[in-house]
Length: 306
Length: 122
Ligand code: SF4
Ligand code: SF4
Image (cartoon, rainbow over all chains, first blue to last red; front, side, top):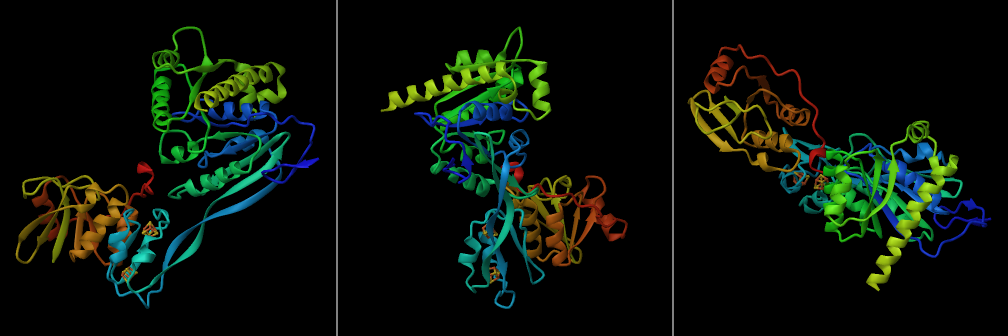
């Protein structure tokens, strides 16, 4: 047994360590496209791997992996607190806060905690030194092990302003990892998604075969282009007939690295919380092919860039 | 008494604005002198927390009363801290609402809606 480099837990040493350990971010324009399905199954077929669930408002990956040896860590941010005796009501802090998380009314200093982005500015600008910082828990990071996969999940408490501190904590795990990393990103294209793909070597976009699917694909494609990230597409829920997402890929020279056909069997495995590549030989094979294609793509990128 | 109202334009013929925090202008109406004063709502363009900022500007302008169709819970908290009474407008006419308020026939605004917690812009 050797300890896993990222979580220090024990995994059997018979497993192959690959030559290349890319960090692959899995994205989609909205939820429900199969993003988690893909991320979970790729982590499963990647040999030893690190799976990071950055979809902190709705982390689902752990429901499939059911990781054991769980460890939980609270994630805290700094928010301001006041010493009312020192405050003279100048409102400099209120004017400073560009998120409008502060107010001063009727000789009362008011902080709206769920709007505060923990920038620390108000504490710095207060001429009376009436403000100081205190810790506030906004969520947690859980980690555990599921066969060969090291599973990390971020949970943001409901109503909190930003999950970015949790994502930063999750991504910090990738720095010491010597295995492939699969990053299950939040849906959409907001700043929280940008944070999630910043360190990725490769972005995998998951798209549904509808007009809306193609539109969502375009959204995330524009985002990853902005970051100059190499990317490829997996077409999910494919059926006979026209696939607008496929058309988008062809028109924009976007490599299609895999196709997953619409299949009630897969749907059932998924809704039962089973990892298809773990319980089905056929699907293990199919996801392995996609993973190999991604590996080739990333190696190609490395070759071009070096 | 200084009465504040979110409005769509800068004349008494304009209408009450459906939004509080995002209203383009505020009318401040002095019930003694009966002089209307229209000012830009600085919060209208803010990325998040517009209701809080708008409420703060009303408090800073020493408004006693706010007449509005709706108000977020965060803004309501700021207004309550400064004892600004909040009444619910009826219909879109500025003058009719000022008159109704003068007669004491406007109800207090009972419901506040939850804020968006800045999420819409994140
Ligand atoms: S820490 Fe920053 S965001 Fe939070 S209240 Fe202070 S100035 Fe506003
Ligand atoms: S800047 Fe300091 S003194 Fe001024 S209102 Fe804020 S907390 Fe009070």
